[in-house]
Image (tube, rainbow over all chains, first blue to last red; front, side, top):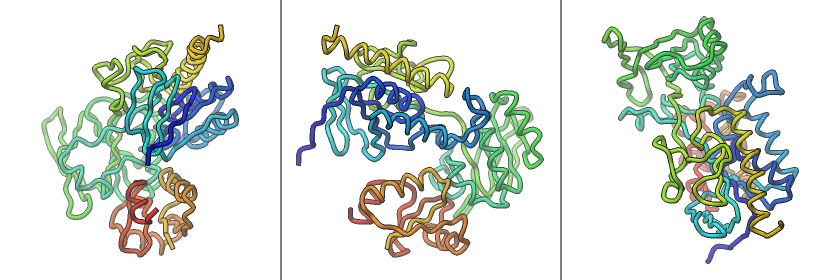
Length: 312
Length: 76
């Protein structure tokens, strides 16, 4: 059966902070707005335990913050579909075509806020131990490690926040990072003061061992060149992110890192296509800047639509 | 009856439950955080250290939120 064709003023790809903020603004401007998200609504912050650097909140969980923004967007009429996956996009035509598993959307404007995915552990044993000792979601899998030994890989804010959170379950926790910490001072001090945490900097994980489940890892001290075996029951990998731009790479200009090239106005190389949030090439990627991008993209999308429809 | 091994603050578990509800599938929640028996059952079924786990017969199961596999398992 042929897929149903549905027209939308705006289709937003991704329901993280940038996408939902754009949806909120588009909704308030009475634009017929659809948000498509096939992973978690909230994107990377869906897993954040305590956010302390979003103005207006002393500390808020990612899920609480994002569900409020989602509600705001929905209150103004935006529709969020979190169960349909995009198969193909054609952005150069007008209207732009977004084909999903179930429908073909014809959109006057597309705002891409598809964000980033966590980078996988680059070791051949990753597949063997995925879900059996190698994990990417602390909130989902952390509780499986009650009174066990956990390692967190990574040195940014997300990794260190994850480490602090996981000490709620772990008897002992190692942070293993290949260089120096990139996390802010407040977060670094928190892990340094945590009595359950032992830190290995300038250290790499070289091999994973175990029969059916992970049992230990081999680590390399890059300064001394020494290797040693560390008994761990689980590793939570937090070693950075990769942009979600696979669907757009044939039509949009991407940077070397795979992000979409667009300025502060979020305009891409195709008229009517905007890039917002972490997927846009820029120096600072924070929750606040994601919200700012969502705002700019939505307001400029409305201007573009007005011109397109000959409103002025 | 469809059983979903999960716990309340797990985001992928919540997405799965929302999906099943949207498709009109009735299911029993087996909370592995509150119920030790449920946690043991879950381990026995999947052998993995991750949730959600969806099963009907306790033998065939789907790990995580994989829509295509869930549709196939439940015939929806």
